Image 1 (cartoon, rainbow, N blue to C red):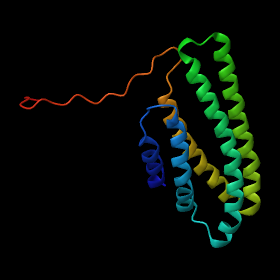
Image 2 (cartoon, rainbow, N blue to C red):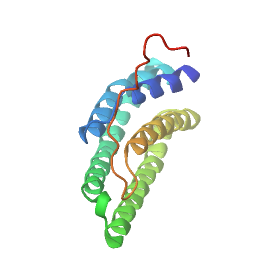
Image 3 (tube, rainbow, N blue to C red):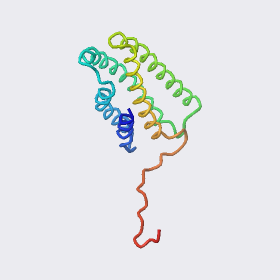
Length: 167
């Protein structure tokens, strides 16, 4: 399990912020690696795989719609954060709360569905894995979003050491 968490963190942290397409790249890259990570952790039997993966694809499709809403919210925030009004700030945060509620409702709904095709404890384990993946992605995204009114700091190279330094 530790290898799993480390793998997710390495994947997520391999990006640097250059533009808003960063978030799209992060989603795409994690999407391609998520299945492998889930497979490694869950170690499905052939019978479980047969019933799990079609339902997972349905779940992932529904989650991607919410990801699109989140990306739209991030773009809206990026367009407004430097000179945001109180009303716009509250509107954006309420939209965020609505998206978070939809994500939670989706997980609750699919936990029941997964619990009908694989053992309920295995369905919970899967949701734990998904939560860990999402938390790491959320932390990575949050680390790239400036707070309201703060300028974006350009990414700079570390200063190189001069030859002959006593340090």
